[in-house]
Length: 488
Image 1 (tube, one colour):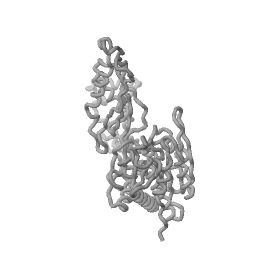
Image 2: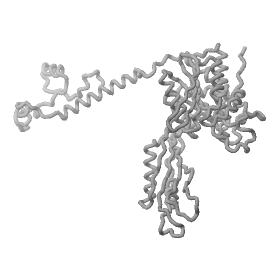
Image 3: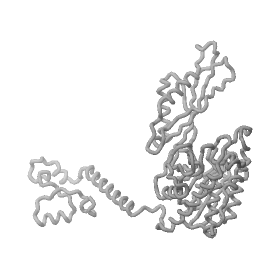
Image 4: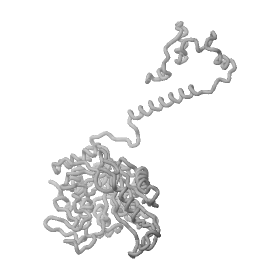
């Protein structure tokens, strides 16, 4: 008899009723802790804080001690709901109407966390309460904010405790239209900056006595937006720069300001890194300024570089689970904004697969009850296939190169040593022996000069001795490497 299924909708409603706007936890982590502890998980609540930032509470839970170690990751913090009067249903009520669940965080991403919890409880119930391997949850409250006290520190904290992860699914709303149409396998990087133009303050009636920075700001903004940063790459869309605000700070209309500022954000692909991108933007601004505009750019720190996950067994596994449940072959995408996958990918293979993201961050954010059930079924199938594959595959020793890699590394080392030996022979200093120096200075026509003899034998001493024994005057020049393992 099949065990009863856990209702993801009930879990999602409970989470939506926690008004956990970043960085507040508002009871959401406590709710998850209670569910997981009841299922046998060991749960840790960890708070991280940097100077000048708000402390953020995070949760790590694990059941099992064996491999493979599969992790679900996500965040319970949400963006503010905005003007609540515009919502059809209150943003933190968790209302269901016509098969649709409404609330801030319904798709981004409390619904995904609820589906992961329900799938895990179903899987454990079907396997006697213990997984084949290990299952863990990495849940933060600092994804929608500046993301410095959340997942980036949580995975580091886990690694310092000796935790190792094999695979991870991040439940961000990856699908575009329906469940199963898209998996996020990477993300573009993000970089923020402020373009500052300095002028000279003055009265608007006497512009010749002032220097209006707004003119220069508009000119530089136009230059930075005129040409594309690139035309995309094999795995990414084109990079784009967008100005998001213009700030003059001038409360009156008869004063020419002394400074004008414009904030911008760049989403960049794998054709750039942060250093090269800054250099490109500053060069374009300098060319446009042509020495006539006083400007500079204030760059903000960023921990969001572009990345992409390479195809492999885990990607095949998740695609197979999606096909089994939905009948769809998902598209692999790197579109969208940043996510916490950029931190997790340094520790294990990570993919993003969650609900349909059309309404995220909008008024009346929502998901259908049917989508929650479908996502739960996909997660449940992933857990099942992952465990089955774990018992079929050979054990893997971490951080140890394969024999082929070890052989290639040794061969490369020998080649480098041979090149270094030849360089030393070529550039060695002249001999200090008087007899050898005199012989080297003999005219080339002088009898007995080594330079008029047969080509010098560049073989090992044993081969040279054997050549003398058989009376051969000369042998062809052979690389010294021929005597060493026959690898040349």
